[in-house]
Length: 439
Image 1 (cartoon, rainbow, N blue to C red):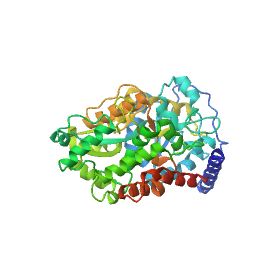
Image 2 (spheres, rainbow, N blue to C red):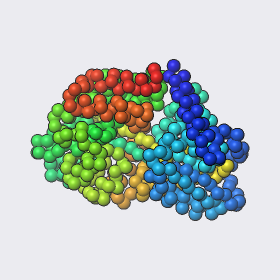
Image 3 (tube, helix red, strand yellow):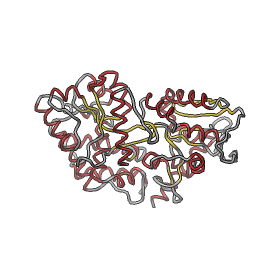
Image 4 (tube, rainbow, N blue to C red):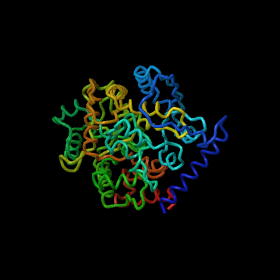
């Protein structure tokens, strides 16, 4: 049933995109303009203008990637266009389904793009270039013959990654006699208890936004296993978060709130406020994502570090959310597919990977990744743990379009204020999830 619902949803999305496209000047959602270019890694010496599309917030790293790519391929110039971030996700289906598409584009909804035939499979290029990318980095952008996300052909390759975890204040930890980051959930709780006893806030957090949910990214994987959480986030048939494991994960949040480990009024604290207070020295730990690396590094230097939500047992793979910064794909109607594929291939070069690091993102691939910035280096070390362990899923709040605002944030707030029992957390989220999917 879920496949049918997803296919119906994809039809609706495509139909909406068709309507939007028809309203745009010179646009169409037809694939009639598809260019049949034989797959090749030989770009010759013909002058090529490659058209690129992305969200405006990603322009800085895109500019750096484009400059380096053009230096490597002097016969190719890239003309980039950017949509404002608050509309790029909405505009994405229209952009890639137009008759005159960019050659290389951010794929904002891989499922509808692949089901609608608006983006090509990258498997022939993967074979031609010999791409060897860990499955954990690309499964979100893959679809099988049954139109299920999570496996099968790859339709987009990310240039880098965002991930969730916990920043920690090393200087404050030292004053408390804590000499290293916790390796298990039990050690994390011991450190928070030490902080509380000393009158130090154990964990700066925000529950008005997604801050505490970032803890759940790891706790849910710890308690349910990564396969179950991937199935949920990828909307697989039969996927459920209404489990004993979810109840246990929710119990941690309720217990930590009851113990006073979060700041007073945490349900009214937003992410910007939490970041500001943490960088000013308030809080031993701060659950967030690597998108705050530059801000924290600038404010705290080498007194800050980043770790994953610790596993239950030392040595078990740490769990957390991992999503692409820009998942690049090639629209079916692209004129220069081979040149577009060369750009994607370039993303896996040492040069491109270093550019992503310098812009605060963990790079694609498995090669060496280091940074002179100590906070960024701790992010990269955590990222390496993620890739080695393969214990990651997409952000839980990306499971459906409305699950964060309509289910996760209110349910987490109720866990914190004690109005929702941890045993009911999973069924509450599951009901909203299924309602949104039309089940």
